[in-house]
Length: 264
Ligand SMILES: O=C(O)[C@H](O)[C@@H](O)[C@H](O)[C@H](O)COP(=O)(O)O
Image (cartoon, rainbow, N blue to C red; front, side, top):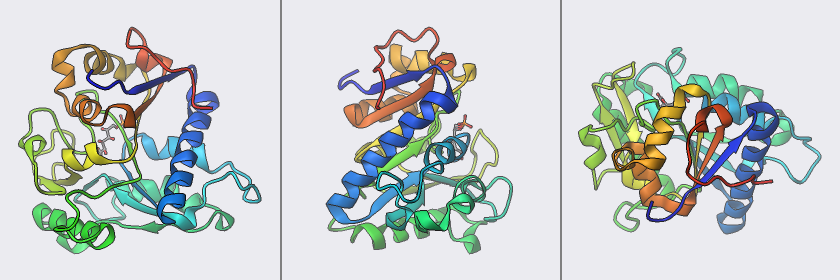
Protein backbone atom coordinates (compact mmCIF):
# COMPACT_ATOMS: atom_id res chain seq x y z
CA UNK A 1 0.00 0.00 0.00
CA UNK A 2 1.40 3.39 -0.94
CA UNK A 3 0.36 5.20 2.23
CA UNK A 4 -0.55 2.90 5.13
CA UNK A 5 -4.15 2.88 6.37
CA UNK A 6 -5.12 2.13 9.97
CA UNK A 7 -6.48 -1.36 10.59
CA UNK A 8 -8.08 -2.03 13.98
CA UNK A 9 -9.20 -5.49 14.96
CA UNK A 10 -11.24 -5.86 18.14
CA UNK A 11 -12.21 -9.02 20.03
CA UNK A 12 -15.89 -8.03 20.13
CA UNK A 13 -18.20 -5.49 18.52
CA UNK A 14 -20.17 -4.34 21.56
CA UNK A 15 -17.44 -4.25 24.21
CA UNK A 16 -14.49 -3.08 22.11
CA UNK A 17 -15.24 -1.96 18.56
CA UNK A 18 -18.19 0.30 19.47
CA UNK A 19 -16.37 2.30 22.20
CA UNK A 20 -13.33 2.74 19.93
CA UNK A 21 -15.51 3.86 17.03
CA UNK A 22 -17.17 6.27 19.45
CA UNK A 23 -13.81 7.86 20.35
CA UNK A 24 -12.86 8.10 16.67
CA UNK A 25 -16.17 9.72 15.66
CA UNK A 26 -16.07 12.15 18.60
CA UNK A 27 -12.48 13.15 17.73
CA UNK A 28 -13.62 13.78 14.14
CA UNK A 29 -16.63 15.76 15.41
CA UNK A 30 -14.51 17.89 17.75
CA UNK A 31 -11.93 18.63 15.06
CA UNK A 32 -14.63 19.61 12.55
CA UNK A 33 -16.56 21.78 15.00
CA UNK A 34 -13.35 23.60 15.86
CA UNK A 35 -12.65 24.09 12.15
CA UNK A 36 -16.06 25.21 10.91
CA UNK A 37 -18.62 24.79 13.69
CA UNK A 38 -20.36 21.94 11.81
CA UNK A 39 -19.76 18.23 11.45
CA UNK A 40 -20.50 16.93 7.94
CA UNK A 41 -20.86 13.19 7.86
CA UNK A 42 -21.98 10.79 5.14
CA UNK A 43 -23.17 7.31 6.08
CA UNK A 44 -23.84 4.09 4.21
CA UNK A 45 -26.43 1.43 4.87
CA UNK A 46 -25.88 -2.24 5.72
CA UNK A 47 -24.77 -3.16 9.22
CA UNK A 48 -23.16 0.22 9.93
CA UNK A 49 -26.06 2.28 11.38
CA UNK A 50 -26.65 -0.26 14.15
CA UNK A 51 -22.99 -0.25 15.24
CA UNK A 52 -22.97 3.54 15.08
CA UNK A 53 -26.01 3.75 17.33
CA UNK A 54 -24.31 1.41 19.81
CA UNK A 55 -21.26 3.65 19.74
CA UNK A 56 -22.95 7.01 20.17
CA UNK A 57 -26.20 6.75 22.04
CA UNK A 58 -25.04 5.53 25.45
CA UNK A 59 -23.41 8.83 26.46
CA UNK A 60 -24.56 10.94 29.38
CA UNK A 61 -26.11 14.12 27.90
CA UNK A 62 -24.61 16.07 30.83
CA UNK A 63 -21.06 15.12 29.81
CA UNK A 64 -18.99 17.45 27.60
CA UNK A 65 -17.47 14.41 25.89
CA UNK A 66 -20.40 13.26 23.79
CA UNK A 67 -21.97 13.51 20.37
CA UNK A 68 -23.47 16.97 19.86
CA UNK A 69 -25.96 16.17 17.12
CA UNK A 70 -27.00 19.82 16.84
CA UNK A 71 -23.70 20.31 14.94
CA UNK A 72 -24.17 17.29 12.68
CA UNK A 73 -25.18 17.40 9.02
CA UNK A 74 -25.90 13.84 7.92
CA UNK A 75 -25.73 12.87 4.24
CA UNK A 76 -26.04 9.51 2.52
CA UNK A 77 -22.86 8.06 1.00
CA UNK A 78 -25.21 5.94 -1.06
CA UNK A 79 -28.95 5.47 -1.21
CA UNK A 80 -31.34 3.10 -2.85
CA UNK A 81 -33.99 4.62 -5.15
CA UNK A 82 -36.98 3.55 -3.05
CA UNK A 83 -39.41 5.58 -0.93
CA UNK A 84 -37.88 6.93 2.28
CA UNK A 85 -40.12 4.69 4.35
CA UNK A 86 -39.37 1.53 2.31
CA UNK A 87 -37.59 -1.30 4.11
CA UNK A 88 -34.71 -1.09 1.57
CA UNK A 89 -34.10 2.62 2.15
CA UNK A 90 -30.81 3.52 3.84
CA UNK A 91 -32.50 6.61 5.25
CA UNK A 92 -35.26 4.45 6.79
CA UNK A 93 -32.56 2.26 8.33
CA UNK A 94 -30.52 5.15 9.71
CA UNK A 95 -33.72 6.75 11.00
CA UNK A 96 -34.87 3.58 12.78
CA UNK A 97 -31.45 2.63 14.17
CA UNK A 98 -30.05 6.05 15.04
CA UNK A 99 -32.05 9.21 14.35
CA UNK A 100 -35.25 8.16 16.11
CA UNK A 101 -33.26 7.09 19.16
CA UNK A 102 -31.26 10.27 19.73
CA UNK A 103 -32.31 11.72 23.09
CA UNK A 104 -33.41 15.36 22.76
CA UNK A 105 -30.63 16.38 25.14
CA UNK A 106 -28.00 15.26 22.57
CA UNK A 107 -29.37 17.68 19.95
CA UNK A 108 -31.03 17.18 16.59
CA UNK A 109 -28.98 16.67 13.42
CA UNK A 110 -29.82 18.13 10.02
CA UNK A 111 -30.44 15.21 7.68
CA UNK A 112 -30.27 15.24 3.88
CA UNK A 113 -32.28 12.38 2.35
CA UNK A 114 -32.66 11.94 -1.42
CA UNK A 115 -35.53 13.58 -3.32
CA UNK A 116 -38.39 11.09 -3.22
CA UNK A 117 -40.06 12.59 -6.27
CA UNK A 118 -37.16 11.45 -8.49
CA UNK A 119 -37.02 7.75 -7.64
CA UNK A 120 -37.95 6.60 -11.16
CA UNK A 121 -34.97 8.38 -12.63
CA UNK A 122 -31.75 7.62 -10.67
CA UNK A 123 -29.70 10.03 -12.80
CA UNK A 124 -32.03 12.90 -11.90
CA UNK A 125 -31.95 11.79 -8.26
CA UNK A 126 -28.13 11.80 -8.38
CA UNK A 127 -28.02 15.25 -10.02
CA UNK A 128 -30.43 16.65 -7.43
CA UNK A 129 -28.35 15.21 -4.59
CA UNK A 130 -25.22 16.71 -6.13
CA UNK A 131 -27.01 20.09 -6.22
CA UNK A 132 -27.73 19.72 -2.52
CA UNK A 133 -24.04 19.08 -1.89
CA UNK A 134 -23.11 22.08 -4.03
CA UNK A 135 -25.42 24.29 -1.96
CA UNK A 136 -23.84 23.07 1.28
CA UNK A 137 -20.18 22.70 0.35
CA UNK A 138 -19.88 25.78 -1.91
CA UNK A 139 -20.27 26.32 -5.62
CA UNK A 140 -19.06 23.56 -7.89
CA UNK A 141 -16.73 25.90 -9.80
CA UNK A 142 -15.00 27.17 -6.66
CA UNK A 143 -14.60 23.79 -4.96
CA UNK A 144 -13.39 20.85 -7.02
CA UNK A 145 -14.63 18.28 -4.52
CA UNK A 146 -16.84 18.46 -1.41
CA UNK A 147 -14.86 17.88 1.78
CA UNK A 148 -16.77 15.61 4.15
CA UNK A 149 -15.44 15.65 7.70
CA UNK A 150 -16.17 11.95 8.02
CA UNK A 151 -17.43 9.09 5.88
CA UNK A 152 -18.79 6.04 7.66
CA UNK A 153 -18.79 3.16 5.20
CA UNK A 154 -19.32 -0.57 4.93
CA UNK A 155 -17.46 -3.11 2.81
CA UNK A 156 -19.32 -5.71 0.79
CA UNK A 157 -18.04 -9.29 0.46
CA UNK A 158 -17.11 -8.43 -3.16
CA UNK A 159 -15.12 -5.37 -2.04
CA UNK A 160 -17.77 -2.78 -2.94
CA UNK A 161 -18.30 0.29 -0.84
CA UNK A 162 -21.08 2.88 -1.04
CA UNK A 163 -22.74 1.73 -4.30
CA UNK A 164 -19.41 1.57 -6.13
CA UNK A 165 -19.14 -2.00 -7.37
CA UNK A 166 -16.04 -3.81 -8.72
CA UNK A 167 -15.46 -3.27 -12.47
CA UNK A 168 -18.52 -1.01 -12.86
CA UNK A 169 -17.99 2.11 -15.04
CA UNK A 170 -18.98 4.37 -12.11
CA UNK A 171 -15.53 3.63 -10.66
CA UNK A 172 -13.89 5.56 -13.49
CA UNK A 173 -15.90 8.77 -12.99
CA UNK A 174 -13.60 11.74 -12.48
CA UNK A 175 -15.99 14.70 -12.61
CA UNK A 176 -19.43 14.15 -11.05
CA UNK A 177 -19.81 14.12 -7.26
CA UNK A 178 -22.88 11.89 -7.18
CA UNK A 179 -23.56 9.03 -9.61
CA UNK A 180 -26.53 6.87 -10.49
CA UNK A 181 -26.56 3.13 -10.96
CA UNK A 182 -29.42 1.18 -12.57
CA UNK A 183 -28.06 -2.36 -12.34
CA UNK A 184 -26.58 -2.82 -8.88
CA UNK A 185 -25.59 -6.45 -8.32
CA UNK A 186 -26.80 -6.02 -4.73
CA UNK A 187 -30.56 -5.40 -4.73
CA UNK A 188 -32.33 -3.08 -5.16
CA UNK A 189 -30.81 -2.27 -8.59
CA UNK A 190 -31.45 1.51 -8.74
CA UNK A 191 -29.26 3.59 -6.49
CA UNK A 192 -27.21 6.75 -6.18
CA UNK A 193 -23.72 6.94 -4.72
CA UNK A 194 -20.90 9.36 -3.97
CA UNK A 195 -18.19 9.05 -6.62
CA UNK A 196 -14.75 7.59 -5.86
CA UNK A 197 -12.93 10.98 -6.01
CA UNK A 198 -15.37 12.38 -3.42
CA UNK A 199 -14.86 9.36 -1.18
CA UNK A 200 -11.08 9.54 -1.52
CA UNK A 201 -11.11 13.26 -0.68
CA UNK A 202 -12.82 13.05 2.75
CA UNK A 203 -10.96 14.32 5.82
CA UNK A 204 -11.49 10.92 7.44
CA UNK A 205 -13.06 7.65 6.39
CA UNK A 206 -14.02 4.80 8.70
CA UNK A 207 -14.96 1.39 7.37
CA UNK A 208 -16.85 -0.92 9.67
CA UNK A 209 -16.49 -4.56 8.65
CA UNK A 210 -17.38 -7.38 11.01
CA UNK A 211 -18.01 -11.11 10.88
CA UNK A 212 -16.36 -14.06 9.16
CA UNK A 213 -18.15 -13.20 5.91
CA UNK A 214 -15.64 -10.36 5.42
CA UNK A 215 -12.37 -12.21 5.99
CA UNK A 216 -11.71 -13.32 2.40
CA UNK A 217 -12.33 -9.89 0.95
CA UNK A 218 -10.23 -8.19 3.65
CA UNK A 219 -7.33 -10.53 2.91
CA UNK A 220 -7.67 -9.62 -0.74
CA UNK A 221 -7.95 -5.84 -0.14
CA UNK A 222 -5.01 -5.68 2.25
CA UNK A 223 -2.73 -8.26 0.68
CA UNK A 224 -3.23 -8.61 -3.07
CA UNK A 225 -2.78 -6.43 -6.11
CA UNK A 226 -6.21 -7.52 -7.34
CA UNK A 227 -7.80 -6.50 -4.04
CA UNK A 228 -6.17 -3.08 -4.20
CA UNK A 229 -8.19 -2.49 -7.39
CA UNK A 230 -11.51 -3.25 -5.66
CA UNK A 231 -13.53 -0.18 -4.63
CA UNK A 232 -12.49 -0.49 -0.95
CA UNK A 233 -8.87 -1.01 -2.04
CA UNK A 234 -9.03 2.11 -4.21
CA UNK A 235 -10.26 4.14 -1.22
CA UNK A 236 -7.30 2.81 0.79
CA UNK A 237 -4.93 3.70 -2.03
CA UNK A 238 -6.36 7.18 -2.55
CA UNK A 239 -6.84 8.27 1.05
CA UNK A 240 -4.07 6.33 2.87
CA UNK A 241 -3.63 7.34 6.50
CA UNK A 242 -6.97 9.19 6.50
CA UNK A 243 -8.68 5.76 6.38
CA UNK A 244 -9.37 3.60 9.44
CA UNK A 245 -10.89 0.13 9.39
CA UNK A 246 -12.92 -0.93 12.43
CA UNK A 247 -13.10 -4.73 12.28
CA UNK A 248 -13.64 -7.62 14.61
CA UNK A 249 -11.39 -10.65 15.01
CA UNK A 250 -13.62 -12.81 12.80
CA UNK A 251 -13.25 -10.40 9.87
CA UNK A 252 -9.47 -10.03 10.18
CA UNK A 253 -8.76 -13.72 10.79
CA UNK A 254 -5.79 -14.60 8.56
CA UNK A 255 -5.10 -10.98 7.53
CA UNK A 256 -1.39 -10.33 8.12
CA UNK A 257 -1.46 -6.55 7.43
CA UNK A 258 -0.19 -4.85 10.65
CA UNK A 259 -2.97 -3.83 13.02
CA UNK A 260 -3.13 -0.87 15.32
CA UNK A 261 -3.92 -1.48 19.00
CA UNK A 262 -6.87 0.77 19.72
CA UNK A 263 -8.08 4.35 19.40
CA UNK A 264 -8.80 4.79 23.10
O1 LIG B 1 -26.70 0.53 0.56
C1 LIG B 1 -25.88 -0.36 0.62
O2 LIG B 1 -26.06 -1.47 0.11
C2 LIG B 1 -24.64 -0.09 1.42
O3 LIG B 1 -24.35 1.23 1.55
C3 LIG B 1 -23.45 -0.95 1.07
O4 LIG B 1 -22.35 -0.29 0.51
C4 LIG B 1 -23.06 -1.59 2.39
O5 LIG B 1 -22.45 -0.65 3.24
C5 LIG B 1 -22.14 -2.78 2.18
O6 LIG B 1 -22.79 -3.68 1.32
C6 LIG B 1 -21.79 -3.50 3.47
O7 LIG B 1 -22.95 -3.95 4.07
P1 LIG B 1 -22.89 -4.80 5.42
O8 LIG B 1 -22.24 -3.94 6.43
O9 LIG B 1 -24.33 -5.08 5.74
O10 LIG B 1 -22.12 -6.03 5.10
